Image (cartoon, rainbow, N blue to C red; front, top):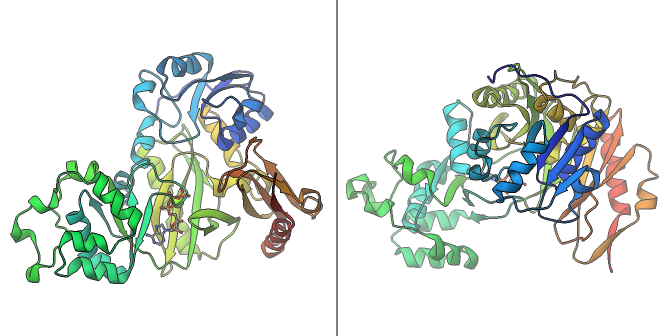
Length: 432
Ligand code: ATP
Ligand code: MG
């Protein structure tokens, strides 16, 4: 736990590294509370800049600019995890750099989850084609009936992921040569593997590490060093009944406060819809909250973060952690007494938590852009009772870009879901 510090009170200034929609929504809440805002972002018209007192337009890698941001603020925070530790030297931030360092690498975050006793899908580091074959042939992966190869770093919204079918897993364990095996994979994965595979770490292991019948298996002997720098991770497919997240906040007194599990539905690997309540039973729900709390306590986390879970056979299975307010938590702005952004601001300023109580049920849908298009139908959508419209002020729509979201509120969740679906049907993208 960090030492007790003097609370940061309005009208002091909060510094935000990153000026996208998360920075903007942090700024919105902070502004309402009376704080000043300074944001650093390279883009001249970034969403958070519209709400900031000062916009430092600079690259995130510009150490001088980051120092300037810190000097102008009484509390420093981020809206993304890929912060270069070199530019943060000597600076205090909330959260600290450690959860960012862990969660921006899938190998590190899943290894930590496992260490803390949090259930995960089977996963193995992949440094080479041989590693990939060994991981595919592992009985734990084979038992999943499918697998996903993910880049350890830099992936988001389902990018940097390739699904492997049962027949590809079977082929991995068979007598094919490595090049014939690679020939069975999707072409973009083939190219990537040949471009990024480093020294064949796994093939340097002795033959005795291989399973009888020549079916290669990854052994426990995989070195931490190799694993920690592996470019990919192979993960078993989880046969889940639903996906959900725990969005919560760690405070400087060591406490952790979260909302009930939020159900999430994805389309093409990107979050599409979130619901304020889920069909989780009490036991699974409590376990997921305890998992999130153990991560918060492990880091002495200060600020809002989210943990994404699968529900498989009634049990929560850890997918990943996001060390920042989360897309699935946007509905808290309309449905909870204190939103995830207010809790974040309170935590980073050393204030006590706000009440997390529910005001109503809510259903949220993301509005993803299309190339050179404009949103139409808002005048109809906004007339639907209970509909709340959030727009991020991005000038240019692009395919898949998060442009805004809509949330419908109601005392009954299915009514809220019906309303948000109806509003979504009214909206469409028209080419300019
Ligand atoms: P985001 O940043 O949007 O959360 P991401 O790029 O970090 O996404 P993941 O959360 O790992 O990627 O995966 C995106 C989606 O793909 C998941 O929400 C889930 O629907 C599916 N998925 C990922 N891993 C698995 C798995 N092991 N088993 C089943 N489905 C999976
Ligand atoms: Mg995810």
